[in-house]
Image 1 (cartoon, rainbow, N blue to C red):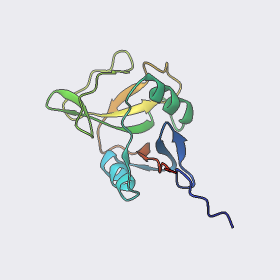
Image 2 (image 1 turned 90 degrees about the vertical axis):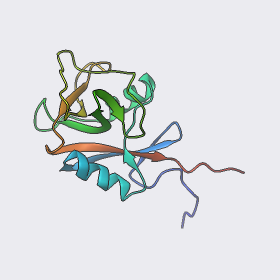
Image 3 (image 1 turned 120 degrees about the horizontal axis):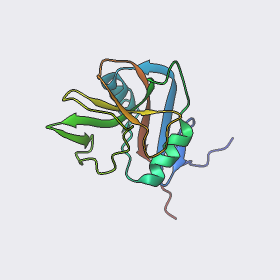
Length: 140
């Protein structure tokens, strides 16, 4: 029996000291997605830089239509795009022509240019989603 401690729970993907769960087997609203992640000691993904954006873009896949994507932990709040950790978004990887309104939540869409693959949607629509949490780091 292998009892060695792993940085991520089985089914999660390790990248730069974080674990990601790409939920492809069910679709949920933005709020349901966030609750699903929180029940696993995680939250919806927060993208910190272009490298993380590229990593995540490589791990999503097409489903249903070009308008379906993966919920991110990014929403329009007080006229700003704000991540769930409270930081304002500075990356702006939006699909050209995306015009957010006050009740918008961000999705990553498969098959678009990596620096232009975010779209918006109302939180009640059901989509796939990505959870993120800190990896278990072993200190010897």
